[in-house]
Length: 307
Length: 244
Image (cartoon, rainbow over all chains, first blue to last red; front, side):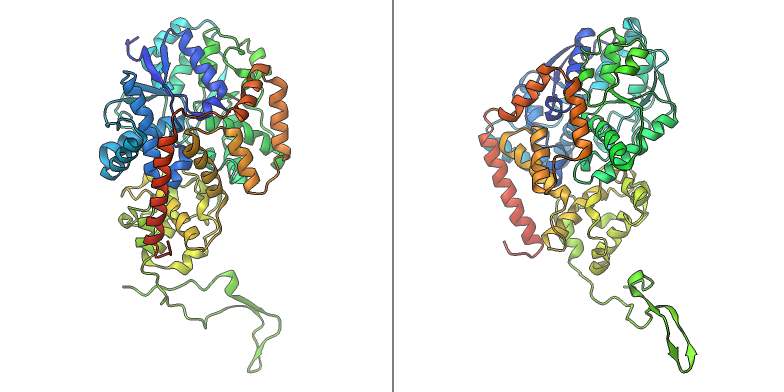
């Protein structure tokens, strides 16, 4: 244990209050079980997501910057965001505010009109829930705490798009041994392997689930998701581990849609990595919110003596 | 400047003659139209500048046509007609008529950012796809595409309350695009969920539709954002030479 990130600010974001509720619950339960403290940002707002970025990227920068300034006001230098979209946007805001004068100008103008301090780049570092567990506890720390090993569970780790792309907004990645890779991320693999799981070689770990058009271009999303699901099965996975509420919900939704519309049935289960780690630490399936997932993995979990 | 030629070997230029005799020779069959002029004369010289003026399009001028974007593209892998490299070429050359042939698929970019990751010139092709989609809509070449309706539905909620409630975004989007909420797959999904979900959470989600999640004291931010959005709208229309 490095002693790093023992207490961080927590930015759940809108999805974790809605469809990604299970991710919020399991993240909090995991933190509690590991003795890590999190403090939710007070009165946060939407990070801007992809939708506001599509209307105007500078507006998304402002929305994310407001959240960063809340973390600063609360006395934190690190904010942890489990949602890939939120994580990506806070990182992007950090980058744009440091490099782009026009983004700074808009954020400053809007912040002043909204009546709060303008966020200064470089004050708060944004980390993902994966960084949080990896740094604060690490593989050895996890191994020592595992009560219910994931032994025999074959997992395909799915990271999605926003965790690694575009690379310039993640200056801490691709820094050699120990750091995360943007072309072949491994933090989730490392953590789940430490919990006893067998992580399969999954070539689509950073492929796209079509989350941007999950409702507006359903057929494209279903095709992309079906590809992810069938490839995971071909790689021998029982479970796809996720680390993003949009990917997770997209996988679940389009798994059903692929069956109903295209007649293609797949049986691989979809669980948040926080749910898997939580169960490995001895938490029940209910505690980590498995019943709140859209798809039902209870048969598999029972079979493997988990939860 | 080189002479740009249109490809004439296209389905709509192929003519079939069941019985055609020319000077006593039977020439029935499929014919491509060789007679039409192939040389392009109607360049839209403003197109690159206009798209560069819209958010995301700023760096289109950097492109040197290596094709890394199309090679990396998620959508290209399922639809070979989806070709960011080619569209950037057309925009830069001002070949509007050719670009318009693909006007109804450009919005399908899934923003996976593989292109932006691969681009050696920092063109931000993902942004260019968004800017081009906006351009096509503003110029009246296309109607509002579903993704734009979704972005607007979502953003309106954020601007008004500081947050979104995803159930409400879904319902509004389906209503605005005239789709029924009673689609087979959606019904199956909700049924499965409700049968397993803890009652407490169901109540919480139900309450969220009545007491919508919102950021406290958001009015000032909301007003500032609305003002900025209006300002940008005017600027965008002006950059495209449209009435404001």
